[in-house]
Image 1 (cartoon, rainbow, N blue to C red):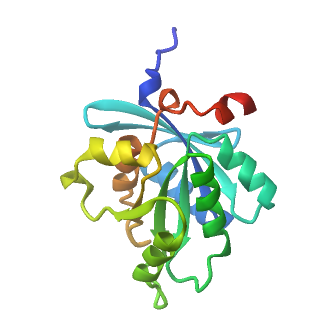
Image 2: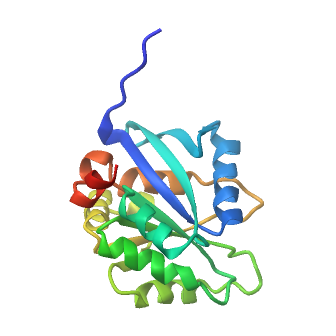
Image 3: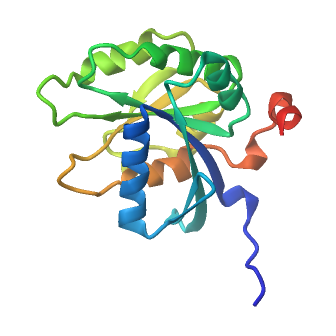
Length: 200
């Protein structure tokens, strides 16, 4: 049987950056809910959004990796999602991750987890993101009612960082995250920085 062609505009290559337990936990939820497949360190999920079937490829990157590794991986990424634990008192690598992404004009999205924990502080997380040089955070409470094209354009050029929250562990409804990936993060055709081409 022939292989079905994939429209490059429908592809989203996303690097998940965070503590290994957090990135793996998120990928496991995607696998459990949407029957995705994992191969060679990459998880692929086919996701319909706004009338288009998207191919979302997720790659995990530990925030504990050496700074040089983080910088190189972010520099050649199409886009990144930084996982922020709302219950953590310190997020030493969050600033590094977002600054490197800003330096190399890599579109990024922040995902806040741990909001079900007693020490969770959502506002502190947003303030931390806002204090980092570069894009301004935009909290997406209800993505269905937001102007998708405008947000996507501003995310691609690095003016804003969409901020989403994961649902509590009692539910696996992460459809809003997959919708946000499809709607706001760039396809490979949108990524035209010379740094990306030179490092592949």
